[in-house]
Image 1 (cartoon, rainbow over the protein chains, first blue to last red):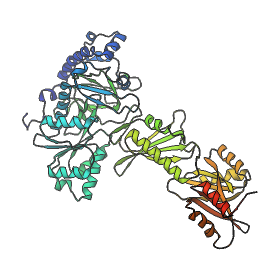
Image 2: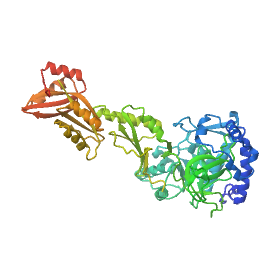
Image 3: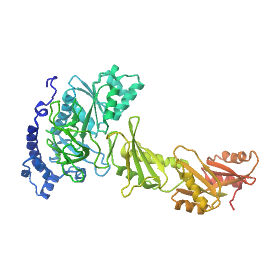
Image 4: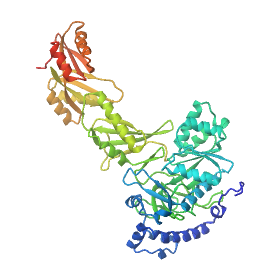
Length: 438
Length: 136
């Protein structure tokens, strides 16, 4: 591709809305047909008397039942796959802390397509093969690592798998390798900037940075602007989820007016999480995605639980792929903290293992000096000691057990019984005081 | 040799001590001594009173987290240096004192304490013929 072209895949990126729809129907029909190789989907279609031939228009998509995270758990590990395992070359998995893990399989073609999406995004925000891309994101099962790695390589950039952490080394890399682009969760960019300041490094003066890709953690527009002001470069919002592949699903263009979701790869629906009916255009609802190019594990009408809204279908950048607002919350009680997905039930499970603790607890999320923190207050069942040291030890034990479960260290506070608020009916377990969803 | 002490888990918040005191007041329970440690995370309010069993029951009925323990209560003459000589015995025996507070009853000084080795402490008290304080 010519470096001057604003599009890496002009044949797909600049499709008209009508052509996008034509392509989507074609790909949807092929996907549904392919899904009949999946024991899960075959059974599900039989149960509701649906045949692949019944999908004649895009509207017929709504005849297909939703797929949920629970379905992925129930079919753990390989029950949804639409190809034999021998065709799969990669597996990603969620931590599975709230039940069975979810497993996502990829064929070689899936990996190639995933890399194509990430490469398209990075090209879209101005990155070219001359650039040096430092991926300061967790590797391993977390798809932000390998996802951006392969995408950045696909584009042709020199790609540095710096992974998360060790800020001093990160900064050394940025300076020594002439890093021009970084991908990281927003709170880590803030952390990097703090360390740069301590080291007397001015990102504007001492680095060649020109682009930041941030995602995997809810953040507000104000947070983004602050990051841009700190680092002196544009920060583009990235959306991904392992169920769809990982990063790459949606990305902002240079206009920064919402995330383009790639409609040659996905069908986007926004539904009311209660009625599951489509919301009116522009209203907030739950994002539902159907994959159109997946081989190993196509997913039909997957409920992401993320809340967002359609901002528009056209864009001055020339792409007619739907623009979605930044994620505005969740339709379940999942919390996203520093890139880690956490459900209150995980916290509860750990707290219940301590006989000294009562049932009532409260999780408070705060942003302190740009870092997201979690405080878990829990009531003491009964006073079990007259010894301050033993209270501190309990506090420490609870903290460690929580850390082993959620991979983050929360603040833990023991409180006397009956002091936490109990609301009528369902107890309030989570108070999110972070300024992320505004 | 030991005496009942009630330890109450309190939050660092105004009004929490008052709630405890009101429960005791209404039952006409007299506090003989009390102590609060000013620690960072939690407060423990320790009370010696004239009706420890009733006090424990009432506090728990009122939703207050409390526990009753036996702590050592040593009676000393109210003259300078008495505490030092008593504590020296424990120090020499390598016993650690977890917490300690004292008060006066008449012309006697009472030392309330908890150690990391109850058995050894008992031995020392017997061996050195330290006088124990009893509520009755």
